[in-house]
Image 1: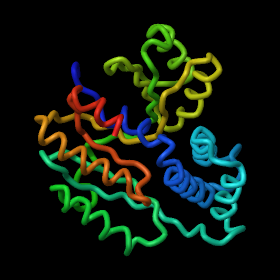
Image 2: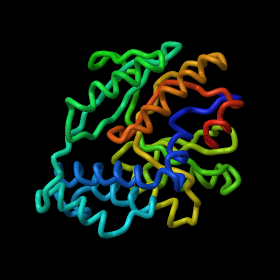
Image 3: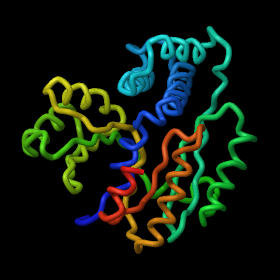
Length: 250
């Protein structure tokens, strides 16, 4: 939508600032642990683990940290008892919100997430209350000045990608999760600079709120995104362009 940006397209870059690197590394470690726990410690045979390791390297996580997280996930070291949980709810203005959680203590995490929803004018919902509104996709964000759109689309489609969308001065490359690594590798092989990349949940439809309500919804999304156990926050919110710069700089 002209004049707006999707939350999914801009939130990941914000999470990579140096001031939050320690927290980001902690989240990435959990993702590696769960991937290794579910599919084994060999990244060549475990696509999810390979993706998690690539994300960790992109965030400059030390090799020792990555190897330690893998060993925790496979049970070679203690501390890998982490489980996946999906929390669903609504924010101000009826914005649908999904939180992908990795936690070692669900009894601690659940009330903390519920409190964040309550404090910021939202409400935690029941399972499947909003998840049907989203599709799990790979999302790669690229500066529109970095490459011609037709050339980008050619690279993406040849690598198995799904679509290229224009959002303001950026391109959003969309693909199925199974094709995420191949699309990323194809772009890197062509020297295309990637601003951010993630496997996230993209809304089928979005809602646009007025400025004050959008600010309240953004405050909730940022509070959730900042929680140690939250890996990914998805929302069906279109953010007014005048708030985008403010969000990225905060």
